[in-house]
Amino acid sequence: MTTRETTGDDGDTFEQNRHDQLTTAPEATEADADPRIEVTEHDGNTRIDIAPDADVRPGPGPGMPEADGE
Image (cartoon, rainbow, N blue to C red; front, side):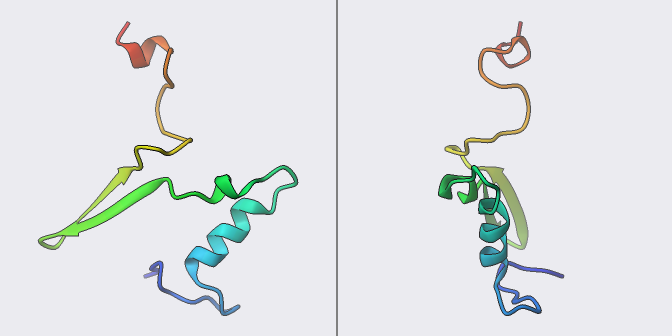
């Protein structure tokens, strides 16, 4: 199982590889590598939530009829 602490064959950690992958596009910025999820563990259960300040979120965006309940 791969975890965030795992070091790959190249010696980089998961976070280093993620950052490199998300910032190599020609117009990429450091903000592209910002965390988009929050992972917490409680009583042996893992919870994954979308970060409240994530620029990219699943589902319809604000102003779309599906998001506004229309």
